[in-house]
Length: 332
Ligand SMILES: CCCC[C@H](NC(=O)[C@H](Cc1ccccc1)NC(=O)N1CCOCC1)C(=O)N[C@@H](CC1CCCCC1)C(O)(O)C(F)(F)C(=O)NC
Image (cartoon, rainbow, N blue to C red; front, side, top):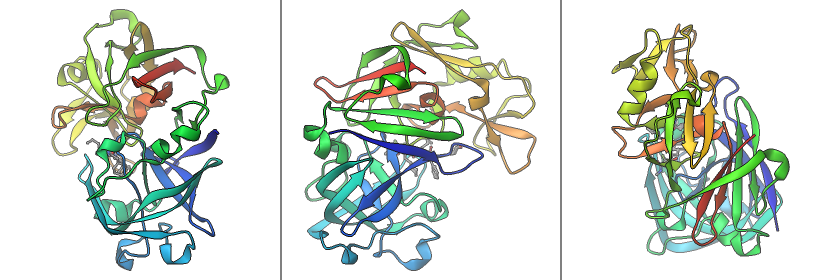
């Protein structure tokens, strides 16, 4: 089996996150979920939430699904890197995305979500695509939809073709030759503790002229908007940007929106990928401001480097969960 589904930006001005249509239950209930390689819980806004916490999101109502079954005594609770959080109980139901159907998928129904989820009106929940070891359901942790689908997929892979201010695609079970050019460069993944962790071979500010071959260990994370890298890399980049400062009040590097920005190149093995300046001129700090927030930010507070959407948009990425797992990057 194979599947293919769109990854649609939730905001038409900035690529803050991407959502993908899925159906859950019988008859099918359609929700728009954020497919996130940085976590491994499949959770949804649900009829079990206080109504004031729902602000326009679609909800899953298990009582209206003839195939829903409560997973007695199971609960979940998750906190994300940006401080957002959610928790609730667990059902098993039919889950379908892009032509792929998984029977008896654990669907985590929210009972409480943090304010940042309530205000993210275009995200109805998440589909974790990390390794199932990260799943937060207790007393028995649950498998991701990808792990449940894997045996029936033509190949144990999924690919991310995210796009700048446009809808991209997640493909499951196959690698679409039409979505990339040249060859795919694969590097090993460390699946412990459960993120798609790989080592970049280095970086260059601007095109790959002055490439600095320093290994950068980080996660490939579709659920993170920006790129978070070590301070040394950030200062090397923003040193080239007129008026750039690391603003405490705005919580990161900002610069005049009309400043000239270099591109940013990162290495995967011998291959080089360039993030265009337009992706790094991320967004005005507030509507209409002449100060812009950078798409490259510091990872020093995070304890982990994150190759988020700003980097993933610059490539075609293969998440290959064969043994041993690996990640592939190709130009497009
Ligand atoms: C400081 C480092 C960034 C952390 C990262 N969050 C983000 O990148 C959020 C995503 C978001 C989009 C829309 C609405 C609300 C939040 N965006 C964000 O912080 N910003 C601020 C900077 O400008 C860009 C938007 C994160 O927690 N990613 C989660 C998944 C998100 C959680 C919040 C909802 C959207 C998905 C993750 O799973 O990828 C994780 F790996 F980071 C994680 O925490 N795993 C446990």
